[in-house]
Image (cartoon, rainbow, N blue to C red):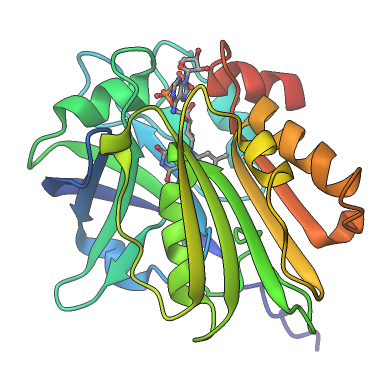
Length: 273
Ligand SMILES: Cc1cc2nc3c(=O)[nH]c(=O)nc-3n(C[C@H](O)[C@H](O)[C@H](O)COP(=O)(O)OP(=O)(O)OC[C@H]3O[C@@H](n4cnc5c(N)ncnc54)[C@H](O)[C@@H]3O)c2cc1C
């Protein structure tokens, strides 16, 4: 008699959540704390752990999603009317807590330009959204992976990747040497990073260039691991400098465009589909 094969554990789950409260962390960074019945199952891999956020369209009180999370969910979501389906955006899990079950997302506000920023600017207790959130630690949604034998870590980010930098600095072992450069629009966008690393953080106010700032610095000796995230052209420029003049091996540089100037996340998704 044949036995049913064990099913692979789903690594992510759709969850209906609601805003519990908001907290302003800097001029442009707003923490939104979510609560909801399924949040007890969410497990973050820490660091730059990503999730998908689904927002309701104007006039809806909750986002419209595919019924089931299976291999076909994304195709079914794309097949829904774009004016009706939940608006999907990518964010970093800044923190997950128990008793009570809560999850934090830190939004870099950029005004009325996009639906996620617009939603966050107005977020109030009780507002409903949905998450596609990790429910196992090893879920494929973490990119910060320093190889064995890394001597020091280089981080470059803009404000959208400040939550991920905070997660990385919390996760790294005490004493890890870190050089970080963060580009923000205004000095009032700076935040404190609680960390046990030996971290030297340089804040740059635009239009100062991240790549030029990195190029102007003497870097520590030893095996480096670099993680770069933020606006796509900014990330590309720093990466080009590291793998070019600085001769970083390509696998030692993890880089992710978190957004692209002049392009919505929907347009970026359509390009990659
Ligand atoms: C893995 C990953 C993790 C991320 N984590 C976070 C996070 O924790 N916090 C966070 O705030 N963002 C994060 N982002 C970036 C966020 O997903 C984008 O900024 C997203 O485009 C915001 O959606 P929106 O609806 O506000 O704007 P969209 O509708 O996508 O874009 C509308 C317009 O706004 C512009 N735009 C988008 N973002 C910005 C910005 N920050 N400043 C100025 N103009 C912008 C676009 O170029 C476009 O012209 C992450 C992205 C990725 C890929």
